[in-house]
Length: 346
Image (tube, rainbow, N blue to C red; front, side, top):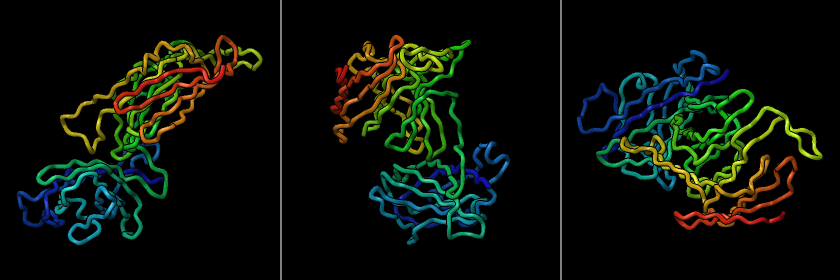
């Protein structure tokens, strides 16, 4: 049977050294922080239909500091809640001030508290005395197929995807708009956060692209290169080769540097807005080296900065298959990133 994912929303205000886990039945102390937990089934009808999460028997929460060391709460390795406690308002206190913390949520079925069935993890959290920390996570099944709570905001194909250092997945471009037998590329960008199960629309690329290439630099910035702007559902003839099933139109030449500047849900303040941006590198938008059906590979020569060479190999131009190899040497020097193009073999 397919197990469902569960969305776990937590609001917490962590303060200093007071340690304890309590239910609402205990006396309420106004300055003691409170964690509110709400559990709902993920909306994936193709997988779980109208299933509920009533089989969640208990929940355990563990805290780790930035070094990865387990932080004990009230002398225990985990804060645990029974099924009955989860049905009412609960609170957790005693989490010490931390930055870069990791919190792990383990869900257990009724009658089995030894082996977790679901797990969620949130990284990069900060807990400050007297300040509220909001946490949103998804409990994914460990032993079966689950589902992502939210779908893409815009359907697309021919897009590119890359995992960022913070664990989010960047989705760029692709085809979405069709007119007769032509599909036109888009410049839309979305970002998926497996921790919180959310999908956000962020700033567009500088230009529409599909079938393009993305390289993630160590600092999380992304190099975007190649691709096309249009696809025509008509065969293309290439000298000396069988006809291709469709035609890629208007090769996209420029190399962009995309910067994600929108925090994860669990690190976002209410005042944060999306400041992501994309700029061309060294006027590469005027380059004429790119061809349809070209392949791309990035050789990172400096793994600390991300400097390296983006190889652009082969492709089709004017009905001829190309044997050419171009290289765009990417230099990363702090905030400054430049690209210089040269033929490696023509």
